[in-house]
Image: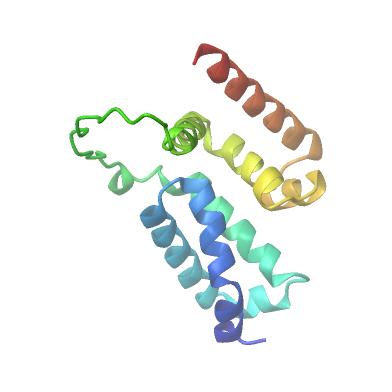
Length: 159
């Protein structure tokens, strides 16, 4: 398999995964782009791996965990002033509000905990594979998931 074939077949899935990690489609695109540049530069090593997709997913996850350490990535998020709300008899936006609240809670988790939750519940990976991607022990993965879920439960109770 060539780099071009790999990119054509897996780019969409990697982008979806990155969106789940970052919570922002634009940052996800930047993360995937930077990772794919590294993949292309190291393609021979990636292609020799038992599972190139798993290897690239690990690269992407490591890139995400380490990404914000550089000062260039520290940005101020600008948000528009909220529009005046119009009272609607039936609230169709509750699902969107709930989703936004979950995104907010996920954004406050440490990056490793968020990565473990995304790998477990979005990518549906077993603990051993998550541990391999994150480069840690299976027990660490389980503890990280447990802590993340406890934090989310506490946020839910407060809300």
